[in-house]
Amino acid sequence: MLLESLEFLLTPTTPIARKYGFLYSSISLRHRYHRQKKNWLPHLKNCQDLFLETAKSLPQRKSVVVMGSAHLHEIPLHLLMDTFEQVTLVDVIHPLKHHLQAKRYSRLKLVTMDLTNALDKIQGLNTLEELDKLAKMLAGEKLFHFEADLIVSANLMSQLALLPLDAVEKKIKRTLELEEKDIICTQFAETHLKNLSGCTGTKLIYSDREVIYHDKNGEIMYTGHYPVNFAGYKKLKEWIWHLAPLKEASKDYSIDMKIEAYKG
Image: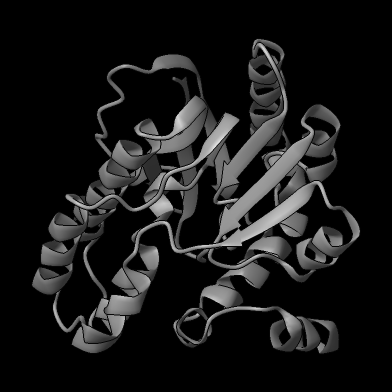
């Protein structure tokens, strides 16, 4: 607990990200990874194999950008550094260890960025309708642009709306229905893909297209869908990620994700 407390205090972040629990979620994700590493290994291997295959196909490997880098569970830093001359990590929060490594390695650059452009607006969100209106407005904006030999979106797309959704839940004092969340998550994901397609370089995307909840008996309780249109991208592979077994996320259900990988 002491180490976690120090990490919480010392990790650079924005006041809003800290206030709305993004830093706490980042630290929690690292602990979940250590608890579930055995279950996650097939998923992580798929991500790393596809990364290496894609990198090998490039005419040059000078630069790579990883969006939603987090703790780099999918593509470890040593793999990025061994494969590319320059490595750029993009996220709202970078773990303390990455800040320390960026000071040590000039080839590593950290970009602290809200890829949704929504976080500075969430304090003004009071209803789900207002969040829906914000999502539609952001869909018409240019949110980011990167240029690199390879640009990776790492299991990010369905996660982009989670912080605004959490903020709305706190305001309206009720838990949103899963169907309501799926609609907003899909809107944010489509906007992300639109901006990603405008970047310069080869794109590699890992994205969960379905989230499946199983009850204590293994029966499907709910399946959420993110019907994002990947027209113009080549589908590389799909697999199931056993994200959270029973009692990890809840004593009442387990969570699997259907992951699809695309190249463009």
